[in-house]
Amino acid sequence: MTMSSQLAEIERLEIELEDLLNDPSISELKSENEKLTYQINTLRRAISQENAINIPPGGFISRVINPFSL
Image (cartoon, rainbow, N blue to C red; front, side, top):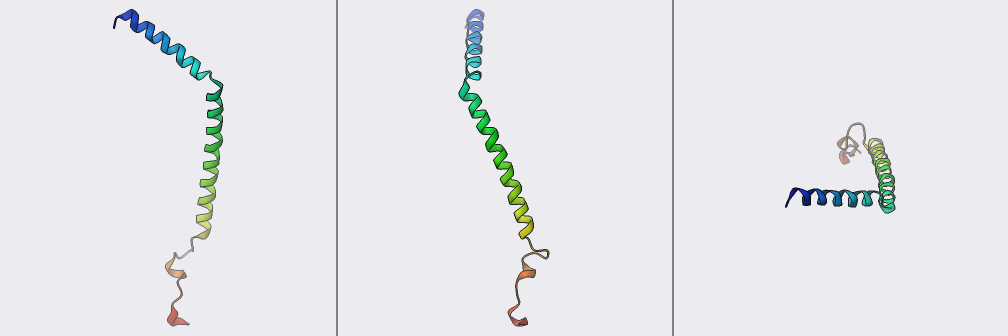
């Protein structure tokens, strides 16, 4: 490939990239992705809080009732 054909290919690819970046569907996808990322982070925080509440202080073993102590 000659230098001029390489430069022409680069120009063509730059134009194609600009067209893709200016496509309205791309901005919609970015917006949707941001919303989903926010929801994921909210759910992760909620799960962490829920797990912190449900863990007994002494761990699981301390919550088991000894049948012979009754």
